[in-house]
Image 1 (cartoon, one colour):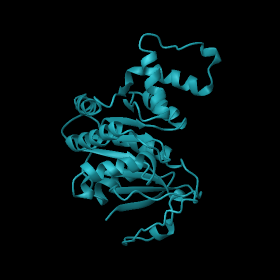
Image 2: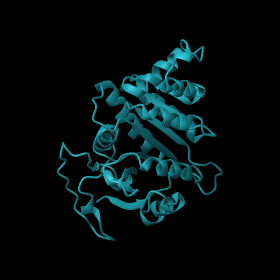
Image 3: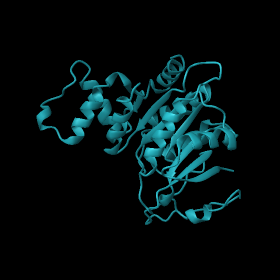
Image 4: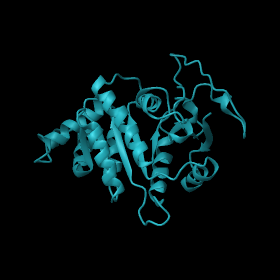
Length: 279
């Protein structure tokens, strides 16, 4: 059984967090792993998939983390669901994998309408539809409604506000340490560049873990990270396009961006989460 709630796009993040802690009785997180990447289906090389799947869930279980995704049954969210299925244990509700999903993008979303009721959800998954299905291996869903249908992206602003609200939580009532956030990037379109820039230019910056070898935006970050190890600039910046400029701005904060080779992915996850919790 999954827990879900339909919320307005302008909902207060503190109210959502109280819902999650009190109504859903989710355990207070000690770390937040926010996963971004491709929303369309893509193929991960076997070594990258293994490093991502095992590393993500091992980090989450060992630290008591929550995992945020878009919650859909395609792209990186589907890979997160598969990782939860393989490595997450038997009790789904204790996996704390939260999908934050646009209500208007969900196939057969009218089947989910109701108050304090159980609803069977069995979407047909029409390949010609612009809508998508929820991934059933997530434990909870926040379904964000901005009044549109078939339009992606409305959830991102609320998701970021909720992440910042979670950062204000104390990992323990007796400690003065907030919940650290770690952004994980797998594949991804050009829109991911702006997302990463928002994280690394935040004060304090949110560390970003880029899975090299997963393709597209993630590999661009990994390449540029290597090329700017000694010099921030690559080539003639005056000839660069807007995307290149954003990537360069991200490299202003390159200390917050890490490349993950598949051989060291699991080790990096363990050390990074441990260091985040010791800040």
